[in-house]
Amino acid sequence: MVISHRPFFLAGIATVLTLGCVWGAINLFTIGMNESFSAVSYSWVLAHGHAMVFGFVGFFIMGFAYQAIPRFKQTTLRRPRLAFSSLPLMVAGLVLQTIAHLLSPPSLSLEVVASVIQLTAVIIFAVVMVQTMRQAGKRELYDRFVYAGLAWFLTAAIANPVIFKLFELPGSREQLLFNLATFNIPYRDVQLLGLAVVMILGISLRFLPHAYGLREPSKRWTSFLFWGVNGSIAGGVVFFIAGMTSGNHWLLTLQWLTAVVLLVIAIATPLQYGLFKAANTTDRGLKFIRAAHIWFIIATAMLVFTPIYNFGIYMPLTGSRVPFSHAFFGAYRHALTVGFIMMMIVGVSSKVVPTLSGLDVRRAYSLWPTFVLLNLGNLTRVSFQIATDFSPAAYPVMGISGFIEVVGLALWGHELFLNMRPGWSKWTRSLQHTNDCQTITTPSLKC
Picture (spheres, one colour):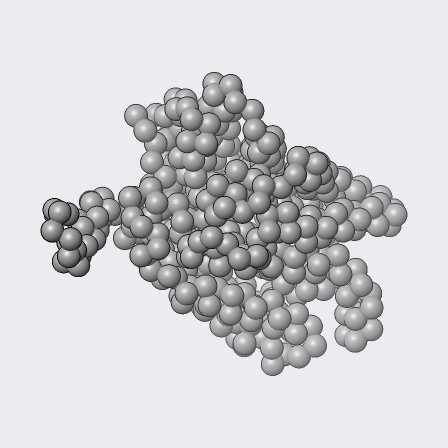
């Protein structure tokens, strides 16, 4: 039995076009029209965010890993039936957790059931991938990134019910504010930086040079990349929680230094590949990958700039006594999630799916409308969300940015679905063969 990427990718597309980006766009529109970030129930925000990470990102990572890593290792996937069971388990867990968030009051018992189901799916994914990689007996530079990404995925899945309790059932508003201030940033870092960014950076070491003929990063840089990104995530989580619970601002300064390391990584990584130099391909996915790395630089630069913005701009200009701008930090998160993570998923899938379907990527739809809409929507969201700190007029513009992204994702999802549809690749190859025959003028070539 061979596991196909198709059902996982389709589940990812279905998630992003329902609980993920579409729901997020509706939430954002509501916030924009009411000119307040508190206009939407926080339970809705939590449910949407969880669906995006465990659903959209999780499904694409699982589907790609099940399909690609055995190919990279020139081996077969271990326990394919067990591996496939992670899909319905994750779907069931996501649906139940969404319901648990939306009940009034939120249901901790249902959340525990949903978390156990999702944790089981993540454990299955981790076990299958570790066994598959070990049976190949072929160690490669990206292996430890995959192992680290799996560890971060497990950490997020284990922490999931704890976070639900802290954020949905805190006991009092004062406790909720403390919980959010102390644990929201570290948990999202585990999810987004740990699972998504570590996996993307690791797989890119194997994928980008072979798929696009780019330069292979040096072993010294690869080692720094691994320890730098994972050390920054772990250090940032520990220093932030310790600093917030103890009130020791020096620990928060150390946490800020981990952001500087991430910025160095974001700037140097595309240089290691020669990503922005002329490439020997016109592949449609390359523009997304280049844009993703630009957004990665922007996002990490914003993260480094956060304390400067809070103390030097936000507090003096708004008169706030709290040195934290929800708008600015939310804009950073969106630059990272849509700008880097989503753009990488769109770019890589745009290359992988037609290739595995037997199509000529050079003849595939260019996806320029998706590229323009995603970047336009993301730029609008990031810039106007920051502007809401100073002018209520920025809210409505920010509010429509999500729908710009949704249209771009819908075009991408539809095109990806057509390429994955059963029989589509055979029909397309037949059509291409017929077209080629109509242009053949050499008598010795027969159709």
